[in-house]
Length: 388
Image 1: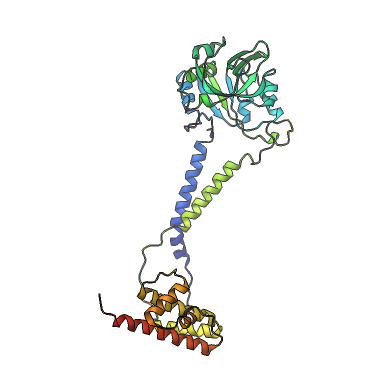
Image 2: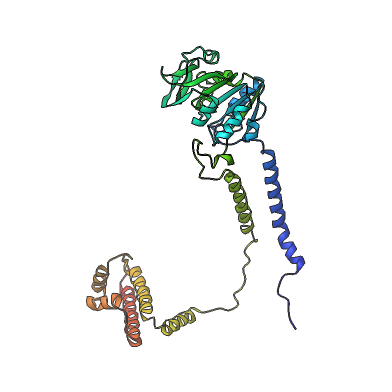
């Protein structure tokens, strides 16, 4: 006659239904979250970010003044129809020369390039070049006739500067290089801005930063806020500014998926199993039997050195406790203290407590007897000492 020891189907389902329900709810929540945030941008200078490096405050300010702000990380949104709209291209990511040419062919009425690279300048703002110098942070007056800058007045600027061709409007610089450059080319307006910090949540309220941003970006009723990522066509393009990225473009989505998987596993493995239930031991093993069994194991493996070390450690523990000797005391100090209290020969004490391992079972038995005599002598010495 056999007895089933495994779980039945019903028992297995009752044990798994709660973890499966929790996992299903978590998966559904993540899917809903991804769908809800599919059209949102993230990271520094994002119009959806409330971090100090984000630009949520600027996006809200523009919307309050009737400008529809659309944040995107998709290149197709930047190469669509640009008639009657402004395209802002952020400083993130890496695009190929062909990608920049597609943006140029979209015929946007107004382009705003924030800290653009060499390829972007050559394609969209010919004649403007990176001056390879930066302005220290500080408040500066526009020193130009650009209406947006004149209305804003003094703003906080710092960062990359540019040189401009004749006919371009240059503002906020040191007289040679400038951080804001406006160029009219191919029937459209191109604004080049050397830094985005002045338009972030942390600095938008300083000086005339908000006014400058509103005057530059609010020229049309719609603004497409494009934060470039790493388009696949830029991986094998030798003319890109930064070269191929070390991390694949979709790595953040993979990282989120892995993080969610780790969370589910942690919840699965960390689930509570209920309170601890005390149970009586099936067999009671006495301390003497345990000691005897351990001694047999030592004898079987001929581990006289380990047995002697265990005996000496036990004896030293008792001696330290009785005489108040520190456990980290040097062997010489221990032997000297014990010899003074017991009257025994220091050399004998040192051999008993710190000598070499016994060579045979008889020597191990002799060591055990000597240690027992020593501990008994100490116990007798303590019992004979009158209380103070």
